[in-house]
Every structure is written in structure tokens, then in C-alpha cells.
Amino acid sequence: MSSQQHWGTRLGVVLAVAGSAVGLGNFLRFPGQAAANGGGAFLIPYFIALLLLGIPIGWAEWTMARYGGRKGLHSGPAIMGIAGKSSFGRYIGILSVLIPLAVSFYYTFVEAWCLGYAWHYLMGGIGLDPAQPATHTATAKTFFENYTGLNENGAIFGPSIETLYFWLLTVALNIFLVYRGLSGGIEKFCSLAMPAMAVCAIIVLIRVLTLGTPDPAKPDQNVLTGLGYMWNPNFSELLDPQTWLAAAGQIFFSLSVGFGVILNYASYLKKNDDIALSGLTAAATNEFFEVGFGGIITLTASVVFLGVSGTIAAVSGGTFGLGFQTLPVVFAQMGPAGNFIGFIWFFMLFLAAITSSISMYQPSLAFFEESLGISRKRGTTFLVTIALIGSFLVMYYSKGLEFLSTIDDWVGTLLIFVLAGVQIIFFSWVFGLERGWKELHAGSKIRLPSFFKIVLKWIAPIYLLIIFAAFCYQNLPTWIAKVINSPTQQGAMLLIAIVAMVLIGCVYIGERRWRAEGLDINDDKPLVD
Amino acid sequence: MLALLFSALGMLAQEATATAPGQIAQPIQPLGWLFLCFSVGFVVLLTLWCYTRILSLPTDPAEVAEGD
Image (cartoon, rainbow over all chains, first blue to last red):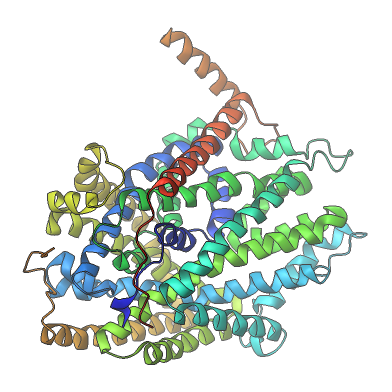
């Protein structure tokens, strides 16, 4: 069934991939990373990583996906099997389903927060009294803790019950859009949601840039100081390897390469559908939102109302702290328009989140249909069952958001490096660079400089390997210690392992079915046009 | 000329990095404006160029409807 799906328009697949990439991190993670790692100077390693790592690996993923699609296969494991010319490729390709599926367990939860917050702002705010600004931080913190169940497990059936309702609505909408299919569901929605997101971002941007100096008693807290906090360069940070690691990491996660989504989405392209320009456009769109909006809105608004020291504290609180605790305080001090801007902001984050989450369900659905030979309806039932169990566990074990963070660390962070590394090595060294280069350019509307051949074969893999090694060195000992000491984290790891075992079983069944159908699953025969 | 340019940039850099961002409240400096304008300008222009290219391409024939 899934092989009959196609993207409706050239722009549709671009907006769908871009929608998958643009998420909360563009608006909340990027500015914090930049400000903490050299300000404007951060953009130097950032753009280098974009050029040498993010975009090239993206191109490799688009190319392998379209090639696999032409062989009649649309699921990540099958495509990786073709690219890797082996069973090993298929089994390691499980990551291309495990990653988006496991991440979706908590992503829809966060998405529900965005929708819930947007609803509250539409209805008058989250309870921050404009007449008592001294209480704002504590009130925002309490609201967030109650909304997310941060303080105790099982809160989703107690103080956080409203979040559960929004989550049900969110998941229903996701399933509806994915079930409607590629063109009628995902493409149509992203074609509306992406421009809507841009409009929302522009509204907030204009409001932020026109804030001036709201409190004359605090002349340092103004727009220019906010921009300075984010953009004044500290070149000494460029001598710190951590800055380069942070920049490469940010590009990597922001573009959603090595996530499994492009591997599925691009498999529905036809033989002469462009890849080079489409891949570049999707990446550019992501950067447009990240640098153009995330780089100006978030921290500027924070500095204007909280000052630099308040903003430093907010950034240290992480993505969720900045987005769901600090910014409400900012909106509360914006005067009468604050609730409207808050609604626009959180609605924009909701759109960013849902265009990402629908992309997380689609690869799994395609895989279940293809490997098990079942209909879309049954595949959806299977997917929903797994997603409900996984998401329920994330929501129930909400204390400290530890269950969520464990999946985010091990699957949403570590495994992405692994999948991207395998993909670029398969593309350049197993599938073959010359063949891959030719395939990439088939139907292409732009010609890539031959410099990118060296990037694809040598620079990107080595760069990625160095970043991954440094990342493991920095984080693995702490992460392992945390798992050993926490039953909650062990539970999360068990969930990941069980899902992985289910996927392994599906690959085993799929492999036999595909061979029986005569599909060229190891790329033993050339494509006949 | 190049030497003059680099030494000017170096002086600006010294001025900009004399106080690390995020530690002392400081309005955006000339180098900060440079980074902001270049970075934002680059991504905006790249995005515009990409979409202009894509939208100016001839429309493909109608696709086969998906078989859902």
C-alpha cells in the first residue's frame, strides 16, 4: 500500500521535511547554545558544521531513500539494507524506526504542553498577576510543575489531568494526519502549518524588537542589550573544543539528519525528482527559523524583562525551563498584549512540534505495513498501540521528567549519531561515492560543487566520528552512572529494549517476505529504468 | 590593505571580547551587528534563493493519486 503513495508537489516534500526539522529546539535550544558558547562567534563553527556535516549527510539520506524507493521499499531498515547491501544494513537500519518512534513517546507529551499553554493564553494566561511581578517566577514554575507532573509520578491522573486531555487530542490529530497519507495528510498539513508558523514568528519578532526599554528604572534591560547578549562575539570560546562540539551537535539535531524521517519521506520521490535543491531548501528553511527567529526572539525578550543575569539563569534551566517557565514571565510583563503574544508563541511552538511528530509516526507506519505485509489500517492500529503504551509510560513516570530525559539522551541524542554515521559510511563507502554522486544528481535542479565529494567521503564521516567520540567521552560515564542508580531510568531503557526487539522481529519477518516477493533487498542488481 | 583590515577586525574583536557576552549587560556592538546581519542575511537570502528556484521550475504532470 505505502508504495502507491507519492508526494503531491515538489514543494510539499520540502515543507514536510522542513516541518520535521523545525521544532522547539530552533527557538529554545539554539539561542541558549549560542549565548553560552561565544555568542556571535558561535555562528562560525555552526555554519561550518552546516556546510560540512548537516547538509551533506542530509543529501546522502535523501539519495539513499529515493534509490530504495525505486526498488519498491520505503522503510528505513529496508533502505539501509539496500544501501549497506546486507542484512547487517537492515538490522542496523532498525534505528531509523526506533529513533523516531521512541522520541515520539515523549514528543507528543511536550506537544500537549504547547497546546495547553496556547489554550491558557487564549483564555487569559497561566495565572501570573500583572500587579505582582515579584510572584511571576514562582507562579510560572508551579504552573509548569503541575502541568507536566514534574513533582510526582502519576500526576497525569491528578493535577496534570488537563495535560492528558490535550495529549489525547494531540495524538488523535497526529494519527488522523498520518492515516490520511502522505499527500492528503502530511503534505497538506505542512503546506499550511509552515507558513502559519512563519507568520506567528514574525508577529512575535516585531513585538520583541519594538519592546524598547519597558522599565526606565532598569535602563540596561532593553532590546539592544538583549541582542548584544546573544550576538556580541567572544572569540576566545573558539579555542574551546566544547564550542565546536556544541555547534556541530546543534546543527545535527536541528536538521534531523540521522533521525530516520528523511529516509522514509524521500523514498516516495520518483526517479527524476530533484534531491539536491530540495535537500538544500529543507535545510535552509530550518536555518531560517533557527537563526532568523530563534536567534533574535527568545533571549532578547528574556533580557528585556529579566536582565542578563536572569537570562543566564533561565538558559541554565534548559530548553523546557526557558520555554515554559521563563517566557511566561516575559509575556506577563508585556502588558495587555502579553497574553496575545503568549498565545501566538505557544501556538507556533505547537505547530513546530506537530509537524515534527507526524514525521515521527510515518516511518514506523511504513515499516510495519511493509515488513509485516499488513494494511494501513492494521499498521496504524499496531503503531497506535505501541505509541500509546510508550507515551503512557512517559507521562505516568513524570517525576523529574526522568523517564523522558532518559529516552531523549539515549535515543534522541546518542543513537542519532550512530545512525547518521552508518548512513554516511554506507553512502560513501558501501553504496559507493561515484554511484551515490550520480544518483544524487539524477533529476537535480542544481549542480553541486565537486568539493562536496571530498566532504561526503572524508570530511563528514571523520568530523562526525570526532564529534561522536567527544560526545561519548563527555557524557557516557555520567549517563551510565545515572541508569545504574535509577530504577526509573532502568525502566526507560527496558522500554527502549523491548521496542527494539519488536522491530528486530519485524525485520526478520520482512526480510523473508521481501525475498519471497523477489525484491532486490541487497542491491544485487542494477536499477532498470 | 588586508593587514589593515585584519588589524581593524582584531581591534574590534578585542573591544567586543573585553567583556564576555552574558556576564555584563552590554548593548550589541559593531561586531555583534556584523555577525547578526551576516548570519540572518545569509539564511534569509539562501532560503529565498532556494524557494525562488523551486517555485520557478516547471510544474510536474499530475501525480498518480495515492492508493489509500
